[in-house]
Image: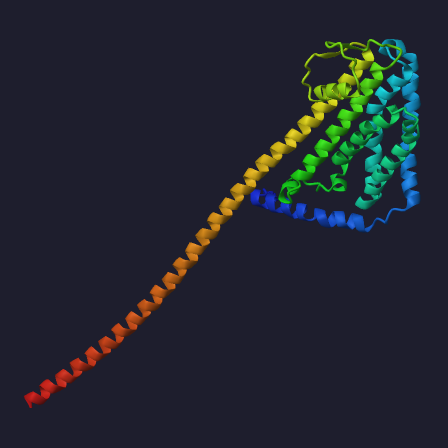
Length: 337
């Protein structure tokens, strides 16, 4: 028995199959969207409960850690809990956002995001009215985390296509830049407020070391947040306590990841723009070549037509010459007679 040789797919076959698969993605997403119902107010409340129940659990857990290790962190339990809630909320968003994405339309996910912001502001607003802005100023940290995780898992909620190449076809780089700036500004304000809480913590009034003698205010720590997020490090403000260094570590790590991520997106945009410009130039050249070929074909047709006419004239001339030769022969014979 002879074994049949397996056919090795060519590069063009693989490319065609990949393009065909990619072209089916919008229809597949549309089918998923079509099978989902419009979100209701009760569903929104359920999703917010799904958010706030694990949030409450992590808050209790963070307070427990802060109570046990307050001496190690050199801060009060509540300040330690606020610091630990930054990574804990990212964990909550990591699991909850894909959970909602698989069950709701894009509009439903946007409504749940808006409801989360409204409820968060509503919970912290009473304390802000009484003059305690600590809870309200900590919200930008979690809003930034929410937007960042949404950008990772379902960017279409933020108006961005899932396929990176499509971002630049539809000029979505402006939207990507806007999302990046929103996340950065929210983190700058949120971490600045968190540094300010650590500084005002009565458990350790010497959490930071300053080169200037001026009394630092909230804007001072927002500036320091910018320095930390960009990993610049001027050294004019130095975190001394473990809690202050933990905040610096979290922000520097997030800043490193976010900056590298969006720089990578920018490089993809540049390379993709070069690819698109090169492809457009090739298309223009191909168009010119086709136009020249069509003109050459027209000229060839015209030349063939003229050659046929010349052949026809030559044929007529030959026939006339033939007739003249016959007549000349007849004339000679008549003369001979």
